[in-house]
Length: 408
Image (tube, rainbow, N blue to C red; front, side, top):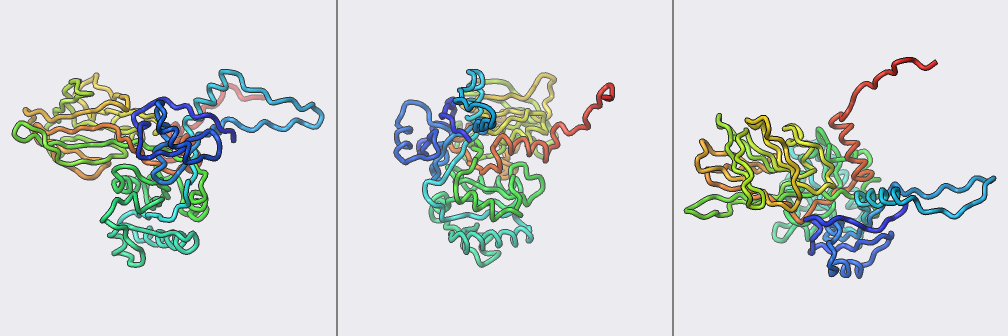
């Protein structure tokens, strides 16, 4: 596998300073390269979001294969550079494949399991025993899980969880990853996700291979998908001023809906403080590209690869023939306000949880988080995504058309 130089376009989540990972075009990296890249005037690579977990990163292009050896009856020639248009394609392809390796040996793992599944509990204990006894790692679980099983230590609630964990192991479905995301509102360690749930769009690994998968991850040299997240704040309007009521970090989406009210939502929408429209609909979805294959897809939004840094705005059943979904730059700030003249309250939820009621005058502010969530890929982020589209959503699953005439 050839390695190309790092060339990425600037985006919101590239300006991450607390993470300082070293990026290089070779297979080895040093801490000194991290400090030099952080002090340069050019934007940091998205791979800088990995250093808080003790990872270094390089960007590799799987498309650049090693040249084939010459056949015995031919004269070996010096390999030539690919044509200019092919070189540009390889450079563009390389931006999508982020390969990382550990700067220091990981010693602490957090196991997050699907709630209410006894079978998943047994599998969690297998993984915990392997990590603790054979990999010599400290294994932590959530306090509720520790009280349930008794044999595993709970993480401390007295200090930030990110300081106690080097790796997250998710055992469940997509909802389990959403829950793990909520534990790390800022930077978080890489997550390796085993599919023990229903759909498993975001959980590419089978638990049957948990030993070999964990070995590969702990030994380093694996691909990750950096999944952008949304910083969301709900403000109450009290005595002529907005007061912060709650904050959330969403991996998939924030959804404003009419709840149990029989009336449509009337939502005033602003983009970078510019009034855009008053939406009359059952609600609105503001999603990441990771969430583009979730609720936004059901409401008619486009499917967008998670490496594309954008914010999606998808109306829910708008009472208009021309209100179509939008794809916005990742740098914008979206505000949704419930008008003072609204007939009823509305509700906002984040990744299908943490439901909050909004009264007339209340405000929801959404912007891209500077801390993407690194998720370990089974192949590459491109390969995993298309495999999930085909396996989970049956994308373009159709009987092939027959030819007009049978070949003789």
